Image 1 (cartoon, protein in one colour):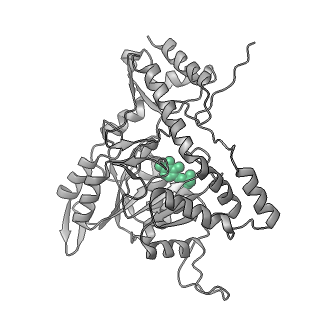
Image 2 (cartoon, helix red, strand yellow):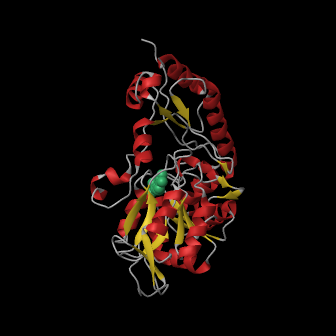
Image 3 (cartoon, rainbow, N blue to C red):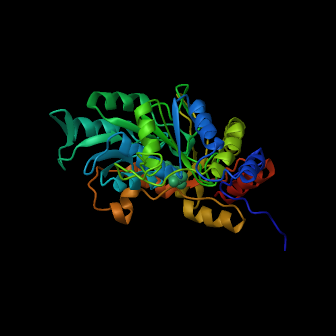
Length: 387
Ligand SMILES: *Cc1c(COP(=O)(O)O)cnc(C)c1O
C-alpha cells in the first residue's frame, strides 16, 4: 500500500515566537486574563486594522454578542444578516432576543446582497417617529450585520450609506477576513464596530479567541466592562449590569501576539495559494472559481469553487467524496441559516443565490502551510476527475 499524506482543509501554522511568549506567561505566572500580552494583542489588532480600541474576547461569537449589545440592539429588534454565513452571527442576534432578517448572497462575489438590503429597507420598512420598522412584523430595525465571508469584503460603501440614511448601526463580522481591504481600507474599520475570531481555522489563531474593535471609546469601555462580569468596583463585588465571562487569557493572547507578527506573510501565502488554484483550474469545464472584486483585496481565507454537475460530470458532494478517498479534505459552504431548524419559521424574501451556492460550492485545501506539491496534487486530482 502506498502511503500518501492527508491534505487538510485549513490547519493552523505556529512557527514563530508562540512558544517563547507562552513560556514567558508560564514562567512569570501571568496565565489568566490579566497580563501584558492581552493589552499588547489588543493594540496589535486595533493598530493593524486602523481602529482606536481593541477588546479581546474568549471567542468571535462572544465578540459578536457583546458588540451587538453595546451598539444598542434591544430585545425584539431586527438585524439584517446574510443567510449564507457560519451560524455564529445569527445566534448572537438571538442571544439578545432580537431577530435576524435574512439577506441573500450576491451572485458575483457571494457576499451579503446590498441591493436586497436596499430593497428591504426602502420597500419593506417604514419610518415611524425616529425609528425604522419592518412593515410585516412591526418590529424596530436597529442594525446591519454584514459578514465578510471567505476572506473577501462586503461592498460596504452603499451599505454604510443606507445605514446613515436610516440611522442603523453597522456591526462588521470580519471573523473570516482579518487583513482584507475594501477600497484600500481594512475590514474592521468600515462600520461602527467589528469582530474578529482567532479560532483554530481562521487566518491566525490563539487556539480560541476573538476581538471587538471600534473607534468609539464608550463602546470599547462598555465592551470591556460587559466581557469582564460587569464589575463596578475593583474590590467590592458591585455589579450594576448582567455581564459575561468573555475575557481572553494572557496565554492565548501570547499566542496571538506571535501570530500577529506573521499575519502579513500569511496573507501573502493565502493569496498565492488562490493564484495557484486559478492558474491550475481556470480551464476546467464546469468549475467557477471564486473571484475578487476590483474594489477588494481578499485574504483568500478559504479558496472556494462552484461545481456545475452537468458540465463537470459530478456534483459538489460527489467530488468531495472522491477527493476524500484520495486523502484530500474539502468542504461545502454553510447550509443557509434560514434552512436550519431554529430559524425555519422566520419570514424572509426569496434567497435563491444562497441556496444555489450551498448546492454547488466546495472549499479547497487552503492552509497557510500547504506545500506546492500538495496543492499540485489537489489540482491534478480535480482535473483528472473532470468529465
Ligand atoms: C468563525 C466565525 C465566527 C465565530 O468565531 P468563533 O471564534 O469560532 O466563535 C463568527 N462568524 C463567522 C462568519 C465565522 O466564520
